[in-house]
Length: 371
Image (cartoon, rainbow, N blue to C red):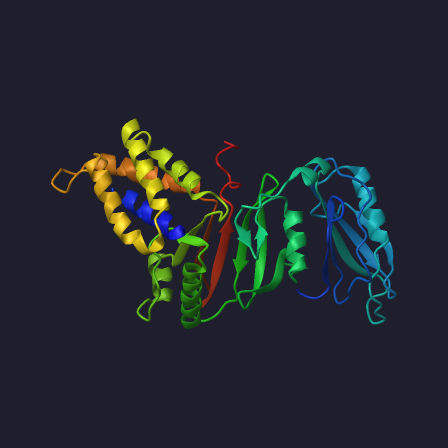
């Protein structure tokens, strides 16, 4: 079905570190503890208080050799919740935390516990759209804590130092960073390990091939395979060139005919009502065409649309202004109809290279609502 959609679009376009733990949320707070060289014993207690606003409370702790928290002080650097009742609840939870024994540690070893609160109404009401773009099968939607809980179930661990999740993805150890917009998940960024220029070319091409063959995505542009002739270091350093590839994600459960109508409605200012209706009619026929007959049907589509006056013949003088308006409608149509984008690029740092992979839920990205 994605081949059909792509054919129609093409036809139309022809015109760590140790001692880091994460407690899963069971109420409206997530908990991260850090005590160098030592691990938590049992589950991390969560505050009993319900926050009226979302935010963070950092509690500074002092732990004895036996693993008992003997002192706790809420409100350390990084705290942005000012509700003292929430501070008190966080301190009480911290006092109930236990760590492993270490007779070689300082008699009063200092550490921190980070409590991230979600306002109760926000936490409970952030439903997850099952049709959203997914990372490791997890919809990139809902709250960060909802997503993080499922990521932990996949075997990832939280790093307080780097504020990311560490685990394995596509056969590589990766760092995963989560991003939200107005409390909703809108991006997952995957940072692959640094490697040599030659190796990063291989990884880039492998990733490109995997996305093209997955059947879940449509290429958003003419993605180019890297060759031995591509001098990445020179192009990035001298020409500031970006080596990247991108793909569109379409909800597999979405009716392709609804998708196509949404896409074509963006051409309403460029076509008459009759022309737009004809374009929709031709597109709907194409969606019912078997893959084996796709090439033949595509040629028929072009002929029908040209006969309907949708396209000018090659003998007619081109209209640059109309072409620009058409291209804008094409891009707006894609953005309104797709459900997400996946793109990746090569980053360079001190002569080493890595791939950064981005999964974006475009419905949750900023759309100028704060302007």
